[in-house]
Amino acid sequence: MDRRHFLKSGSQLALLAAGLRQARADSLPVHSEHAGHAAAATPAGSVPLLPRGERLPALTPLANQSALDGQFVAQLEAAPLPVALWDDARRTTFWAYNASVPGPLIELWEGDEVDIAFSNRLPQPTSVHWHGLPVPPDQDGGPHNTVAPGETRHYRFTLPEGCAGSYWYHPHPHGHTAEQAFRGLAGALLVRSRNDPLRHLPEKLLVLSDLKLDADGQIAANDMADLHDGREGQFVLINGAWQPQITLARGERQRWRLWNATSARIIKLALPAHEVHLVGTDGGLITAPRLIDSITLSPGERAELVVTGRFAAGQPAGLQSQPYERGKRMHAEQEQDETLAEVVEHGVRPTPVLPAQLRDIAALGTPGWRRRIVLSENMGDPRAPFLINGRGYDMNRIDGTGVAGRIEEWEVVADAHMDHPFHVHGTQFQVLARSVDGIWEDEPFLAWRDVVNVPAGQMVRLRFVQALPGLRMYHCHILEHEDQGMMAQIDFLPG
Image 1 (cartoon, rainbow, N blue to C red):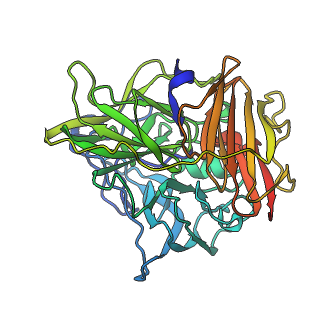
Image 2: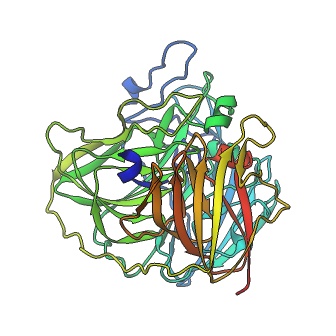
């Protein structure tokens, strides 16, 4: 039933721990309200627990240096960041944007002209990929446009009308993406609309990541199991905090925006004690709210939910991660529910109206071109273990050509024993249908997405248009798989 009926949204990156908002090398140790009894170490030789139970940290906003309406000018820097995770002398070194893990929240408006100066203070080349945004190819931060250590470049683009949604940014240098992500480089990005039908609801922003530490409290390197299955850490964090508290009044409606910013973890989320409506996917609002029991986000996916506080008796009040099997071979699958955040009852409030209609989404018409994209595994060849259409990624090879402005229909096949979340750069797509046990089932509603999970042995049919000409990437969003070859590129020619 999971693969047939649960929504999947979903990607990348290890952000980091116990409320490290703007933490610096000389910062005081991180504390929480419950740190005194929750930060005890696990048995000798294993990883010490993080503090838990603090209030959900707010994301630090990236300051706009422009005073002009319709312009966003800012500075972003990637650099090492030693952080105190425990109340002792230990420091764990992350790689962070603007000394914040997760990176600063970038809030933009439809129509904004954006100019972000990015500086690389890392020992590796890097880039900033504006995941899901309709930006020109040379501004997209792909592997062909990296920034060398010590250098600065400007990312400049204008946001079109109609692109409001929950996006994010992260590195994309080929061969280094996974490491830079699990060391902490990722941040949330919002594009807002001045005609938002849900602007009356209070917002909660939840960036989900996971953290893998070694016994010394340092970020662990990937081992062979991580390279095969994709990396999952011991700690699932929300806004850099482990098991934080979220306040919600009985009867209150809140708008939750969720990002799966993990490297490889597919997360099935549920709030059993509350009423939950899906209202948005990667590319913004859907046409109408949909009452759901759970939602499954694969790496890179996002979702917007309206959560109404009910606190139903006999049900866990918190945000639950429920078991989901994604076909791992070298790590155990999750076998029971786990609490990612406590939801604490905070008074009683009236329940505002949830609009019956959110926005119009027109179905894309007859495609001008069809393609079949096969994701496969070749574990017998360590040089090319993950493939697209039988080939590992080659930065100097063009894997196909298209035409900007033409509707494309792709059938994406997971000829594999693992699920593979599939991402296309530079645009949003509509999922038309999914195969379940060899039978095609139509997608029940229209939505804009840029990541879709393709379960092992199954297929997804989707349509999209690339509005701008140029080179675009498509790949698995399990970062270890992407780095090891499950990526390709297509050149869209002027229409």
